[in-house]
Length: 251
Image 1 (cartoon, rainbow, N blue to C red):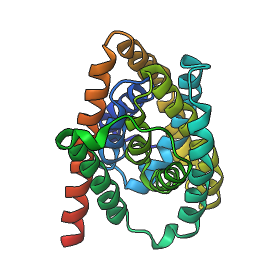
Image 2: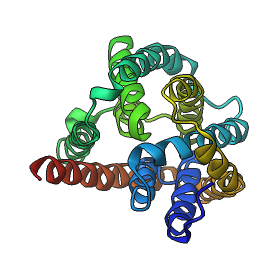
Image 3: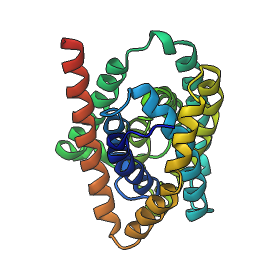
Image 4: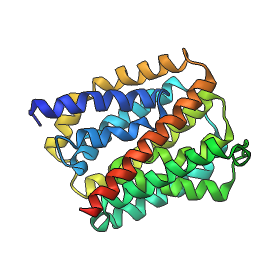
């Protein structure tokens, strides 16, 4: 088990932030969690420690939003997400985390700019199976390495303008399935060792606190503001990932 105090100084807020996002408040801000923990450990180890905690968070989020999700969207996105995880599993040793950051960051930034400056292209859009498979696969692929699948699946779901609890419930079920599936390749690749699992166990009590806090805030804030926050957080996180990835590759 990790005992470094600086690690927990980074990990505790990271887990709470991810939990709040799972509870429906903040959306894409969850992508910050792995980079925050990576200040103390490697990004790969940070992702491994977070995964069991995310599974617990997903179960709590599913219970919080029980029955409030879009089965249509889940059917369109989950098969692609699982395929993305499979591809990421077998290309794991050849993947550059910085390249993934650049890809996801670019998608998030362009999507937000399009929404803000070209409203005519951001009209309510019905779910489409081709787009659902595409964005689902990108979300599964990005989620595997650094738990950064939120921006990709947001590109597909946000333009549909789902009611806020249905939107967050759909996120909850989608990532619940994705993260449970990820447990198998993570174990196969040796990332769920004793040190990481014991550290996850120490942080798990924070999971329900973060999720319930996010769920509470979701119901205290207007739906329009929730969407504005989602787009703002998505842009901030996307820009952060894009800049970090470009600077790392440049060096």
